[in-house]
Structure formats: C-alpha cells, structure tokens
Image 1 (cartoon, rainbow, N blue to C red):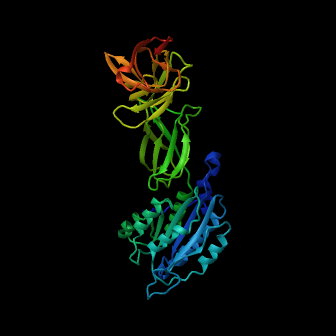
Image 2: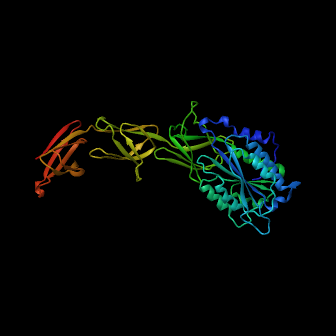
Image 3: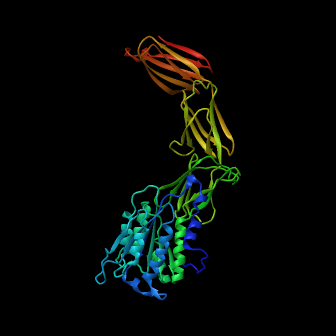
Amino acid sequence: MNISPRILSVTLFLLYAVTYAPAQIPREQEAHLTRILFILDASQSMTGEWQGNRKINIARNFLINTVDSLEQLPHVEIALRVYGHQSPVPPQDCNDTRLEVPFRKGNAGEIRQKLRFLNPKGTTPLARSLQLSASDFPACESCRNIVILITDGIEACDGDPCEVSRELQQKGIILRPFIIGIGLTDDLKESFNCVGEYFNANNSQQFQEVLGVVISHVLDQTSAQVNLLDIKGIPSETDVGMTFYDQISGKVMYNFIHTINHRGNPDTLYLDPLVTYRLVVHTLPNVTVENIVLNRGKHNLIAADVPQGKLQVISESPGQYRDLQFLVRQTGKTGSLNWQKINREEKYLVGKYDLEIPVLPKIELKNVEIRPQETTTITIPKPGLATLVINGTGIGNLFVIRNQELKWIYNTELTTRTESLVLQPGTYRFLYRPLNARKSVYTFDKIFTIKPGGSETIRLY
C-alpha cells in the first residue's frame, strides 16, 4: 500500500517504545519473543540513484537506525539475510543469498557492520531467499517469526515467492511477511500482495516512514474482547474456554477461559494483530468463528452466537447411581457430544438433544429441548433390586415387558448361586436354562415386577 507522507514528531525509538507499551499488557499476556529477519536486496540495481543518493545507502542508513532502536527492546531478536551481494552479473547466480548475521542476543553491532560494507552486484533470488529463511529461525514453539523484505525489484530467478510464502505460513514457520518496495511502480503491487503485506516507498522520507510503520505493526499488541451473545444478542454468556488458532497454519495461538470483568463487560485480551484467527468457543457443541482479522491499534469486538441453557439429570435414589454418566447427542447427528455426570448441571447450546442413560433398562430420550437461560431437569425414578437365585450354573436372558413386547436388556451367565441387579420400576421376564440341561424345554420362565425402592427375589429352580 502507499503511505501518504506525514511528519514524524518522535524518534523511531520513541515510536517503538510507545507503540509496544508492554506495561499495559497483563503479565500473563506478556509478549512472546519476537524475531525479526531482515532480508535485504543487494542486487546490482540497488546501486542506482534514488532521491539524490544510492538506493543501497538509503536502505542501509535507515536499517542501521532501526537496528539501533530494536536492540533496546526486550523480547526482540533480529537477524540479517542478504541476497545479490556475492556474485556479479553476468552470469546470474540464483544461489546468491546468505544469512549474514543469525539470531542471537547482542548481535546489533554485527548487523550494523555488515550493512555498512555491503556492495550490490548480483541478481534477485527473492523466492530462494524466502525459502532458505525457514532455517534461519531456530526452533521455538512460542516465538513470533517475522520477515521484513526490502527490495527494489521482483523475482529474477524463475522462483515463485507467493508459493514459498504460502508454504512457510501454512507450516507455521513465519507469520505473513512484510515487503517494502523501494521506488517500485504501482503495477508491481500485485506481484507482492500474494507474498505478504506490501508497502511502497516513493522517496527516501517515505521509506523511513514506511519502515517505522512496519516495525510498529510488528511490535504492536492489539486489544480485543470476545462477545459471547445470548439469545437476545446480549454478551452475557461467559465462563467457557476459547482457543484462537492461526487460520493459515492451524497453530494454537492463545487459550483463555472467557471472563466478564467487574464492570460487567467481557474482559480485554491482547492479541497479535499480524495473525488471521479462527476462534473456537468450547461450548457444547463448539462454535467457530472463521477468518478474524484485527484492526491494528484499535479495540476489536469479536462476536459469537452461543445462547445456552442447562441440562440436569437427577436420581430419586442418589446413592445407587452416584457415579453414573449418561450420553448426550445433538438430535439428528451421530457421534457422542458429551458424557455428563448424573446430578450435575451442564451448559449446552440452545436446541434439541438425545439422551442415553445407561441404567437397566437403558433410558433413551429423544428431542430433549434446551431453552435459553433455563435448566431442563429430568428425573430418573427410584430403582428396585432384583436378586436372582439359582441351583447351579446356567445361562439367562432378562427382558423388560413393554406393550406386551419383550425387549432384551441383559445377558447373564450365572456361575454363582445369586446375582443382584438394580432395575428401574417395571415388569420383567427372565429366561434361564441350566448349563447341563441340553434341551430347550428345561428353560425356566419367570415374570416379576420391580417397584420403586422395592426388592424381589426370583428363584430359578
């Protein structure tokens, strides 16, 4: 993008320090280490005159000033890669790119020294330089890896900078790069927009300004709040986990449990503005917001519709079902959504759900409605106890009788004289055959009824 000239009223150092403002960020959200790799074009064209000076001189002077400022900042490391400075053209050397100063603390002096003595002479292996930058960043799970590419020309070695940039971002190696064009024409803008965020400087003053803007973007922490909207569109829902993913790489960037502060507003978060996010709100079921782009330097509002109600299944006999868990599914969808513990409330998105409660016999409830800001309560009747008594080892099938139909609920191979089963109230039929009886006519057939809190002994001999 073209940046209109404006008067800078502070030095670069003060601009960075004010923009970064780490003291305003809660300690638990302090910035991770930011690593900035400068990739500088030192191809032959950088010897050209621009605004009364050589392009390389203008670029190196402002970069040296930037390095002076960055070395004062905590949580920032810098490195320098240069291309086009080792082999003259002709012939064209498309491997002419080198990491001149790697990342490490206290390397600013070395970078300044390298910049002062650069002698442009070669070609422009832009894609190759981007590709090799992947190995310039040492392994680090929590670091922000930034590339700032400064160039006065486009790819000259038949590489594809756009494809290389996409691959590096998808792998989570770097964030979206910044490209600063030195005196490039507007028709070249499209060549760089697919690589990263493009800025063009038409004069040396604008180059200084653009470089300051890019650095401020890199170091800025932007505020946001997540509005979890109830059925009326009011941000009253809270106390739920949230995960911010990098939309491009899929990398987890932040994890929070949503909070409403003491003023009744969703809590303020500080997020990296260089990332396009996918937000997953860990309601039951999850709610996802895709392609979140933050406005840098402003307070951002991120909204997700998550109207919720509560579900509770209670037992009239808590002791007998104390550790019971039941299955919850969304109506019309396969797969389990949640195993919920009995006698405990759980929040779900407003809608209809199917429940499967593993008592004997199994209770299946369809289209249970969860209403906004209400608790849907289901009661399991008090069970009874059936004690099966046999005279020897045998095989048994237990059925519940419903509408004169037998529905199987339990198989047992009786190897002891007794077995006790906790059963829901109802009428049951038990078929039993001794294991040593080799004819079906020796099947015992018993019908019995279980009442709430009652006890029945069924003798099978």
